[in-house]
Amino acid sequence: MSFKSEFNKGIINENPAFRMLLGMCPTLAISLAISNGIGMGLAATFVLVGSNVIISALRKVTPGRIRIPIFIVVIATFVTTVDLIMAAFLPDLHEVLGIFIPLIVVNCIIFARAEAFASQRGIIDSLADGLGMGIGWTLALCGLSAIRELLGTGTLLAIPDFGFAGIRIFSQGLAAVMAILPPGGFITLGLLIGLLNLITNRRKTKRQQV
Amino acid sequence: MTKLLVIFFGGVLLNNFVLSRFLGICPFLGISQRVDTAAGMSIAVIFVMGLASVVTWFFHNMILVPMGLEYLQTIGFILIIAALVQLVEMVIQKSSPTLYQALGIYLPLITTNCAVLGVTILNISESYNLLEAAVNGIAGSSGFALAIILFAAIRERMEFSDIPESLKGFPIALITAGLMSMAFLGFSGFKLGALFGMM
Image 1 (cartoon, rainbow over the protein chains, first blue to last red):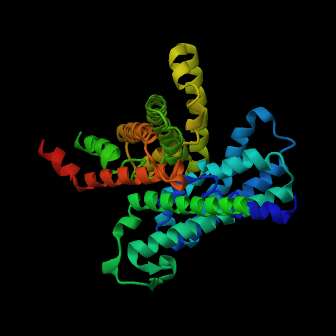
Image 2: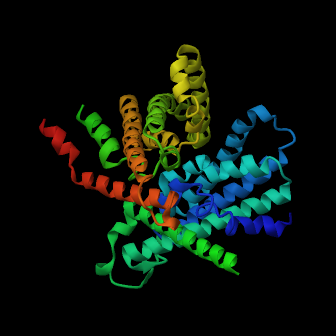
Image 3: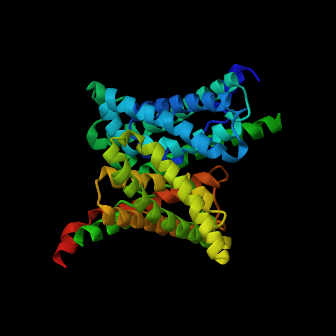
């Protein structure tokens, strides 16, 4: 398959958050503001691309029996890199994402791509796959965060690291704080996936009628 | 003593690992179709999380801190957990085949349960001492057990209910978890320190 199709599949058809339902913990935990979504998504994209490329490059010299520890070390190296870079340059974001940055190590998306894709395919394909999956996840996080940030605080695009308070859409008094509390995360994601299923089902029945 | 009680009840009820800290969501949603499998998984998790808290505490304070290698925390901890899970699996297989039969398939999954790595990192970032770290590990995993068993019981009932086509399966599970999380939010009004201070 070409670079483009490997890249595209992660964004829509095999979107990790909405279709494959991988990496739920950080998806639910950090989707409080769009800036968190972008930060977390890009951090994971960096780790995905890096680990996919290295694991793919090492695939011929990796003994099958100890591949899991090797994957873990490669992934953990990239996660530590991202953790230290973020602590140095984006301290506020690092504070908010907190424990979920080191926890990228055990994110199922990265593991699944390493095991199912990168350990069997060439470097260019793995790079495209990592980039597509990473960006697909980032978009999903941003979508979920946008809904929760708007409903929970009434603003959009607040970026504490740059001292930007965000665009106020409606007043604080109308905001439903529940959306940025833990229950809001579960319920918003549940309804969002339900909506996507509804759209897919509608399309399918329409196609059958035609 | 008061601090230990506060850590324990805080971990189980106030800051439930699954429902308010979002740690361990994958097994929570994945292995909660039946109560007995959920119970098996939670016993395995309690075991590994308690053990991992103690071992990583020693690793951090006896090896990483004296040598000034704190930045190796993530790599070191995940390797320790992976090795620990393997070791526990082998020990259980040799010593108690019945327990191994019951837990066998869940043990390898625990390595990628983010609650385990999460609790060990929290122990270090909160600078707990050894006893507090162990209690925190047990509390976190007991909270996980409470949440997953309750959730599995609800899901067993849900099989017979009439759910809209597009909400079937994962979406309705998430919404149910959201309602449970809302119930657990009610505990956040407790002031544990004052409660146990009086006793």
